[in-house]
Image (cartoon, rainbow, N blue to C red; front, side):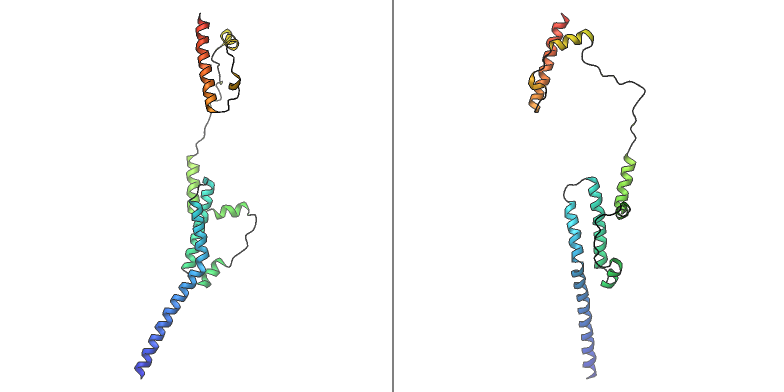
Length: 183
């Protein structure tokens, strides 16, 4: 009789242990499902096209969402709530300090370092004058201006074909002008 009682006690204890293990795991799955969905939404957004700045923001959001989901999966409800609390209402405007603090993940720091190191100062030679010369100078220029009459459609070309026509027309007229002027 004693053997049956100890055997039943051991079996019940094992069943209770298994049930507790599965119930906490399944409650953790249910509890963490919204966090996992948020992570998946951010990752789906990352698969679309975006700018560098938007990419950095998405990367920071992804890191934060992954950390929060991982903490939820690997901790008890009480420790998770003590760390992250319950859902808070988001303020409409964030101050610049809060925004910068939220972006201070490893990857955004690396991107800032890369951007800062790749910027090079471009300086211009301000001592020499910039000279823009027309094709013809002096009397030859006056003769060119009298010779060349630009077609009406070339004054503001609407497409590439018209622009190409205008360029070719001007080159042909310059060839004719050169022949006539050199005589």
